[in-house]
Structures are given as structure tokens and as C-alpha cells.
Image: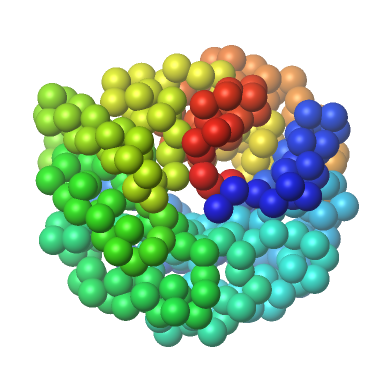
Length: 322
């Protein structure tokens, strides 16, 4: 499920020669149909760009050299104009991806004909309802429906203290469904109550490390795990050990049109109304300073792509997702 050679070449030119991000990560709306206790985003309901503004954003992004549009948070499938947005992105030559909690997936599957990559949050099986608040069968129905119509699917699992006993089962489920699975440890955002992290955070480190060791073993045995071995060994120790290039690779835009540094260091760099190229140029020094001062995170997209950015051989060989 890696980039095509043509897309990889475009990414290399944009990232290493033009020194501009290749992915537009767009918080496409500010609403969610779930209320997960460990998540901050559903609490931030507010203004959203309208359809025309989003299409203008895509045009500006394409002119800037963006090659991938990733729609996420709070829940993209709640936007009625999603088909128009994805269709426009495709029409101007941008690859599309989307991250969803899956609750509306079966209902809206026919609105995703212009979607290239589909990522669904699946953090457990028996524990899924406790973690996400809805029945797992609802999401599983959406996954099987999406698979039946030909979508490239990733199940993204956030490892927490609640689901350590189900990680191996999720890998087997992914294999049986014919989809991919990714893992990353839960990130304890400071805006969430401490009591939540005491309940669902990773506290049994020995059990957690045994679980990650099993994921590494299954990766070596060719199970459909997208993560690289380098990343899996890093998260086993829960210690970021990489130079972050998140803001070099990904342009982060919020639902109301703000450009931010990344999903962890949510520093306001400017607004899309000022022009992507202008904000990118004027924020160069600020972005460099933020990266140097950041204590790091273990979001797999940031780590894996930062390692790719630096041409890590093992990651190039074994990281399967874009």
C-alpha cells in the first residue's frame, strides 16, 4: 500500500528540493458523533469552512505542490459535502485519504467513490464499546462493506491499558478481513483529566512491552502490519528517538482555516486566507524553533514519515503505508 513510483517522485521533489510539505491534513469539520473520553477534538465544536472555501483551499494546496489530501477530525463523514470535496481533490490531481471512527461508514460508503485510502479507528473488539462508546459490529459492518466495494483499508489501533489483551486478535482480524492494521501508543494529551489516563493509560509496562514484542514478531512473520520494525521497537520503550519533520511533511489546517504546526504543538502559524505559500514562508523560523524545543511524540504518521524523510533503510523497506 505504498505510494506509486510517480507519487513517490512527486513527494521527493516537493519535500527535498522545494522544501515544502506534501500532505494537507485537514480537520474537515468540528463536529463528532462520538464522545471518547481520551479525545480533545469533539470538545472544540466551532466554525467550519464552507464548501467553496474548502475547494479554494484544495486549489491553493495543489498550486503549492500538495499531493495528498487527508480529511480527518472530528468526524469527516458528518460533512454532507464530502463527496464534492473528494471529487474536486481528485479532479485536480490530489490523492485522497480519510480517517473515520466508522460509525457512519456503511451508510455513506457510496459517497466515497473518490477516496484512495480509508483509515478506520479500531481500538479493540470486546473492549471496543467501552473505549469508543458504540458496538464493534457497527464498525465491522462498515469495514466489510468498504472492503466489498474495493477500498484500500487501514485499521488504526491506539494501544492503551484497556486493549493489551486484544492486540494479537486485531492483527488476526485484519488478516482475515484482507486489510492492514497499524499501531501507536495512546498519547496522553494534557487537556484530558488525569483520572482518565489512570484508567486507560499504559501503566503495566511489562505487559505492554510483551504485547509490542508480539506485534514485532507478527510483523516479521508477514502479518499485515504497516508499521516499520524501527518504529515498533521505539514505541516498545515509549521514548521518541527521532528527529521530527512533521511540519516539513504535513500542512495542518483546522476546520475554521487556521494553519497549525502539528496536532501536538498546536501553534497558530497563520490562516489559509493569507495564502498557504505566504504563511509557509513567514513561519519558517518559528517552525524550526518549535521542532527543536518539542519533547516529541509517538504518533506513527509523524515518526514513520520523519524516518522516511531521512531515508532510514529499514523504514523504506518495511513501512507499508503512505
